[in-house]
Image (tube, rainbow, N blue to C red; front, side, top):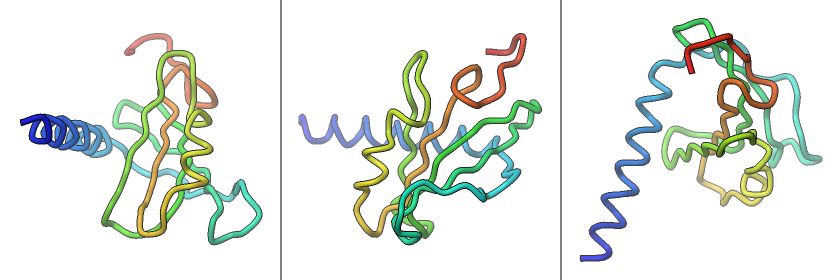
Length: 112
C-alpha cells in the first residue's frame, strides 16, 4: 500500500509539472553553459509563458524519455538543483526552472 501511494504521488507530481510545461514556449536554447565537459554541461535557457512572463531554466541531458522537472522553493532559483543536475544519471533529461519573481526570471508586478 505504501508503494502504491508513493507511486501515485510521483505520477501526480510529474503530471503536474508536464501540465505547467504545456504553457511554456521556448525562446532560446541556451548559449551559456556551466561545466567543463560539453557532454556533461548544464545548459541555460529561457522560456516565455503564454502570459508573456519569461522564465530562466537550466537543463542537462538529452532525449524525450525519463524527463525530470525540478521546482525550487520560495526565495530560491534553479541553482538549488545544480549539484543534482551535475550528477543526473545518463539516460535522464533534467530541467530546473527558476520560477517567476526569483533569480533571473522575470519579476512581473502581478499574476503570481
